[in-house]
Image (cartoon, rainbow over all chains, first blue to last red; front, side):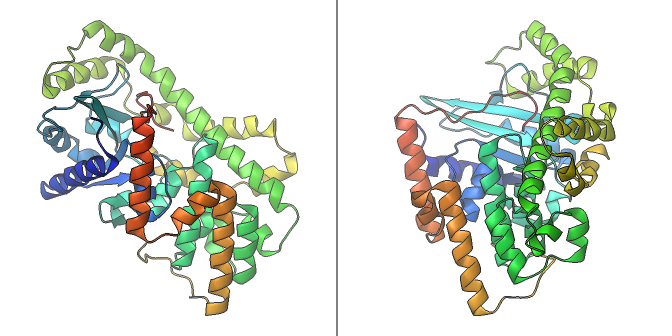
Length: 307
Length: 73
């Protein structure tokens, strides 16, 4: 009998509650958070933000967290260990509970991809705040973008001005631009908001360019991590981690492999500025050069992972 | 959704209605009429709808797991 969504939601919610009782700062994000915020998304896996410093405590908790009598294991050869050193560097640790006939998936992040402010400061119940969730959804997957806009619109409805940073629908931007101007400090962060306020015809091309820019940035970021993980992948394969081994045993083997073969922060090693320059260059091949003038300064979105 | 920092001024009721309609129209364009309707249901009903939708998909064999790559888009 597969696990129902309600069962999974309750399981993950209770995991977060137990984690917080142990002093672990954590929050559910992505699809499940969108559902909680009122934007329906069919999802079953749970993305969890966890303060890197609490990685050890979370691992200990996961080692005791049964689902239908099953304990979790690390998922796949590419999964880095749940350890502060790699979480801080932007890696994700993947876990699976292989309960009879049904599986539950948990992905743990230490740093919210593209997060411009610390996610720990804005929790909403079990969930990360909508600003963090919207930033995380600026991926290279087309399907994520309507969720970004929907979250931004909700934020503006409750008078959180940062919603302006997340509206990627032209009609909606023009509507908001017509009722109230974006604050000056946000115009600096996202120059095309000036086009929306002026109902300028160039908005369409500028919006397209901005979305494509985020796509290129995400592609570049993923390429950097995918290249960096290869030696680790070979080492984990060679170590033949027994899938039935206790989580702590699996973890110890992965830490050993990671210490020898997995850079903690490949994005920093590669250079944030270099990655941004390459994304701009790739973008230049697909959009009008004039649209590049309206791109946002995205360095803030990579400041935390570079710290 | 609770209020946070960076507050702007509240809109008058007429503007609020116009904005609300524009947001609803966006949901129709982006997610389709049915999901737009769902997204504007009260929270408990919305969650129940999503739970039913996911459970139905799982019974029909849909897999929701993403590849474990060590890095997430």
